[in-house]
Length: 277
Length: 277
Image 1 (cartoon, one colour):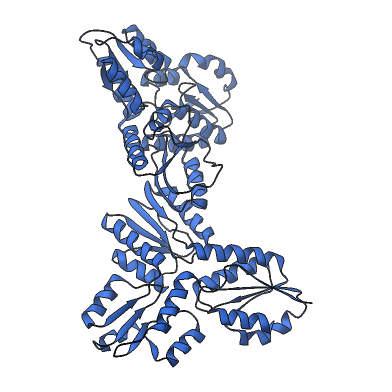
Image 2 (tube, chains in turn brown, yellow):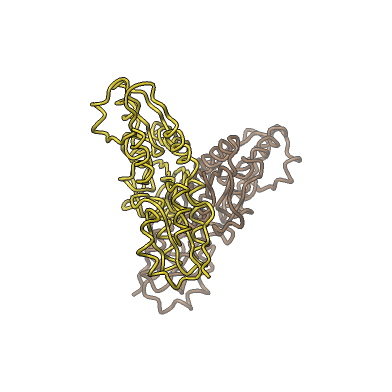
């Protein structure tokens, strides 16, 4: 008899839940409705949105927007310059930036204006980090591993991408403490990420196999996978329940199977996967 | 042939130099001149001061001071409450608090007033730390080793006793980063201490024996001794050149002998020791 154990705090976080709900509920008075980049890192959700007529555009498409169009800004947020561009274009904006990300953007702007050098723990290519960097004139020093390759001089302000790993945060701060004389540190790894990682860590120690559901380009899902893999060698990362067929053969002898899911994995996919197992 | 190598940056630091000079130069218009605690951790200097009529008193002696008396505040500084007490007594104050210590006191007061919890890396019984703690209503969490025994909640402001070891600073910051969500860190270990420790570290790796000169109750001298002892097992801590006689027998085979001295060791004692060796 197989036991399926779902980790606490798996699936949509507060910010994503809000963004998805408001996007699906949004009724345009006129013109097109578009999202700047995929609303969330989940193809099922973005496909459903497309079916509703809400398509994804990229930054390069902004000049072709019309005054009657509406642009949805996703949870990751965007740089200040992007708001300016959209305003110039005259479009309506539905800003669904996660409030926790807005908090980081504000802190970065405030400290940059005060002359602090900004350091971000995160992935320089991730839209959340690209956006945050836009609040300090793209001058941030960005590190993914927590390693820094030169001594930090002057006043430093350190923040983190909301979905970063706590261990990398501690590594970065330790490295900065080696050389910086004055720094202010805001651990902006969000509580939901922290809780999700902790729950996944616990469950993955107790099971024979572990399934991590979430987009392949999702930062927080990738980190969940890394954490689980450390404790449970039989850990698999899938995007949706359909991909389980191949894995089921490999985990046929697993009695206890754990499941967790990234912040952009909708409830229905988690339920489907649990039933499939 | 023996080689005596003096470490750079040994002896009086800027703050101590200033305090000793101004104390010896001070001419009282009337009344007694006293220091609140020994001016520096060096008996030869305090004895010379006493010969000049400047004696040491303790906090408990303040109520017996007269209006015409002058109180010298030493480099370590004192709590705000002590200034109040002295003012109430009506005495004159010659404040020789090290400017670097004043900087710490100001930062602590500012952040305490803003609601930060103050954390001090240092020795809770050291007068500098006792004084700094007096700028946050004696509410600071004080740790000597850098270990903390509970999670740090809320906003934290971290400072260090000027004579602390850098390695303990990094340890403390790492520990705080594990749990604190927001903190500001001022590495207030003073440059003179840092330079003195670095020079002692280098020299102690190259010599057969190492002599560290400074008061037995001097915080920065004790740390110099620890650093040197790690690299050179034949390290000795002395207060003055007279104590060398006993040690000379032990180091008779040492060809290269290193010398360093704490911030409160006057030049004449270092020279005497070098000649004696």
